[in-house]
Image (cartoon, rainbow over all chains, first blue to last red; front, side):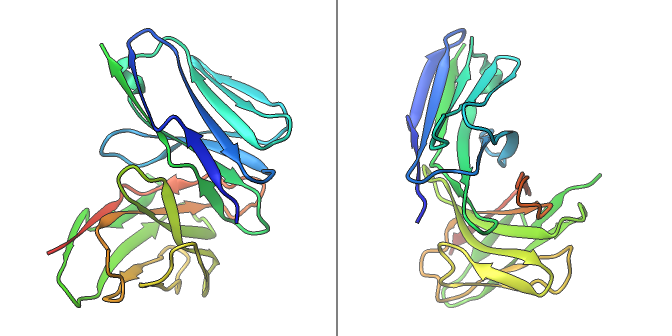
Length: 111
Length: 114
């Protein structure tokens, strides 16, 4: 079945440094979504990418969808302590409603 | 406020006991889902339902059961057959439109074994 790999598993940065997490799928995706889960909280939808090569920005966050629609990345510029949490990618692609989640990247930020 | 309500927040299960986790949504969403989250793991799909009175097994359905008698409700029962039930359980919903599968999550239920 479809598998979504996400790296790194953990990332610790100093406040102000940049951060990137990567997602790779074993199959072509119809779309990819990104979620953020704060410690002790639940996942919250950030964005969805649908088109090949698509790039979207949300303030300091930049999301990319690869040309082959098999990989994606989330880049945070100049991290802040409010960015702390686990970032998950989730790939859509089957003939059903199922999303396949990556294992997430836990971001910690040292003030 | 529209949203998804999960209860209880914490739940303890004894050996051989079945327990039921509640999930209610007032978003008028057709699709509902149950995910299991273990530390350091992603979200693994247990069951999902695209419409009332219909549901499908996800990737880890063994030891779990669900029902979807109402659009608003999708309870999950963790049966005694689930030998390792300790985990964080998340319920989610979506509009059911395949082109926009954005998930809205509840606040979760932490299940532990006594």
